[in-house]
Amino acid sequence: MAGKIKEISAQDFKSEVLEAKCAVVDFYSTECPPCEALAGKYESLSLIYGDDVKFIKIFRQENRALAEELEVSGSPTVLFYQQGKLMDERLTGGIRRTDLMKNLDQLLAPERAEELKKKIVSKERECEVLILGGGPGGLSAAIYAGQAKLDTVLVDIALPGGQVSTTHLVSNYPGFIEPQPGFMLSHYMSEQAKGAGVEFVTAVDVSEVDLEKKEILVDGFERIRAKKIILATGASPKPLGIKGEREYKGQGVSYCATCDAKYYQGKEVIVIGGGNSAIEESLFITRFASKVTVVHQFAELQANKQAQQKAFSNNKITFIFEHEPREFIKKNGSMEAVVEDLRSGESSTIKGAGIFVFAGMKPNLDFVGHALKRDQWGYLKTDEKMYTNISDVFAVGDVRSKEYRQITTAAADGTIAAIAIAAELA
Ligand SMILES: Cc1cc2nc3c(=O)[nH]c(=O)nc-3n(C[C@H](O)[C@H](O)[C@H](O)COP(=O)(O)OP(=O)(O)OC[C@H]3O[C@@H](n4cnc5c(N)ncnc54)[C@H](O)[C@@H]3O)c2cc1C
Image 1 (cartoon, rainbow, N blue to C red):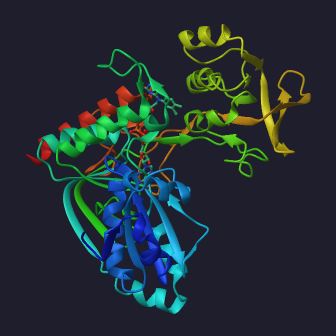
Image 2 (image 1 turned 135 degrees about the vertical axis):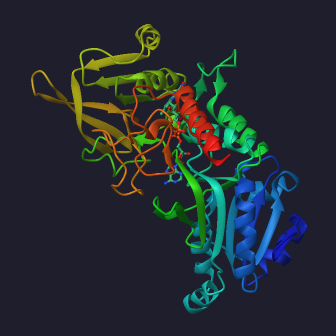
Image 3 (image 1 turned 90 degrees about the horizontal axis):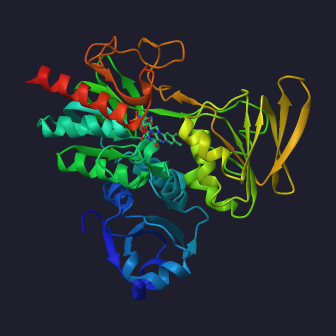
């Protein structure tokens, strides 16, 4: 095993972990993309912290009883121990290097943690194509660039997949007769890009993005410089900006039905919005919830006709039209939405165990400054080959100004940008 890492099994847990001064334990599985994303970070941090903290790996599938005893239910899960005592914070899923370091630092005296940081050696990496964002737009560009034998690096602040990985079922992506779980579709795209030779740098912090120089800083120590940059950072749910929304995010207010609907089995929930996402996700939520109340600001739904028909014929869904939410309140563990009737101006309160917000999207562009030309909603303007106004910088997918934002249109944008780049670099 590379780095200063020791692989152990359950019988050595006491001597290697509980009797150590400080230890960090990675419960991993095979065929687990987040485990693969963690492996390089774990290894490089073991070279920095490895004299002070024992770096342990345990194969979860072969040590199930220990994993269950420690309530490890997902891979990877990283646990931190000080003098045999399990620390409160555990990391799981797409684990960032900065979060690992924060927890490792807490095992040590502050001066020692500072001293160890001096061991971090800055790295530089040159490539031909740097793609920021691993949703369908970035992944399609990666597949084409990789297959064109361009030295391509794809960087994502999370795990690859983008919005598709949190979409329950995708029924309109060509090539699949049956609806596909979103996470499987993004898995196929990622594996195809990796197979084309693209290097993935995922679950990282991205800073110091200099589009003129075509370079970025990853995790504060690795500078990546490219000939061409493709911005494929997609879009995120737009918050309503009302009182109670931020306070109860993740504790009653959600933006992702795939992630959270299962927690509302047999309960009543409220959905805010009336577009495609709101209605399709409401239909999905009815698999769990006993009742879904859709609150929409207009007199009619904006969703496509097929979704509307399904929603109107679903007896678990009721609609409150021409109302807008003004405040979310949490009382005795349950949620309330204060809504205003836009015709009369009168307020009323709707009760539910949880509230799902699907009120449109905003482009993920906080990191790029104001040199790029945008439309009135803040999306990036490009020409038909996906060039932005900055030379050698392209934009694809939902981050781009366009009429229709779908997986196919993001994939098409990524295709066009990569072919244009391949022709230029030939
Ligand atoms: C609930 C829901 C259901 C949907 N259902 C469908 C459907 O059935 N069919 C369909 O065709 N479309 C559907 N869509 C739309 C579709 O998912 C999007 O159009 C598509 O994912 C856009 O792809 P993208 O690559 O542009 O961006 P995204 O999918 O948004 O991916 C962007 C990626 O960029 C990363 N990123 C963000 N900021 C940075 C940064 N600073 N640096 C590096 N990386 C960054 C993110 O982590 C993410 O992985 C749905 C969308 C939602 C929200």
